[in-house]
Amino acid sequence: GETLNFECTLNKPYEDIVWLKNGEPITEDAHVKFTADGPRLKLTIKDAQPEDHTGTFSVRVKGVESDQVPVTVTKKVPK
Image 1 (cartoon, helix red, strand yellow):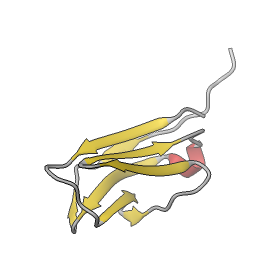
Image 2 (cartoon, one colour):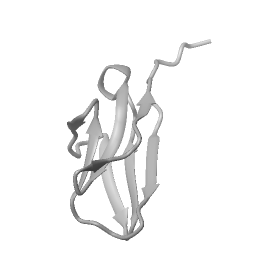
Image 3 (tube, one colour):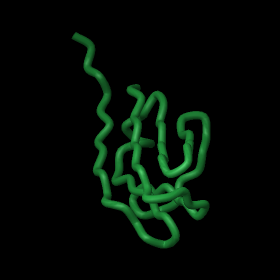
Image 4 (spheres, rainbow, N blue to C red):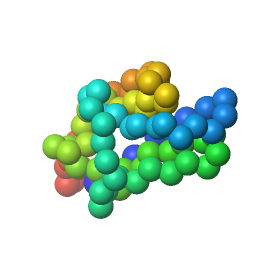
C-alpha cells in the first residue's frame, strides 16, 4: 500500500484535536500516526489498505469539523 498524508494548518495551536474517518474518531495504530507541530497537523497512514483506509477523512478541532476529504485506496494491479 501507499503512504497517505493529510495536513492542515490552524490559525493557532489547539489541544482538542480528533481525526475522523467517516465521521468516527480514529486512533493511532501500526498504520496510522498523528503529529502536530504547533498549528500544523498531520495524519499519516502507512501501507494503506483498501478495506481499512478507504473512506472520508476529516479533522475536528474544538468541536468544529474540517472539510471532508474522500479517499479511495485500491490495490495495485501487477502488470
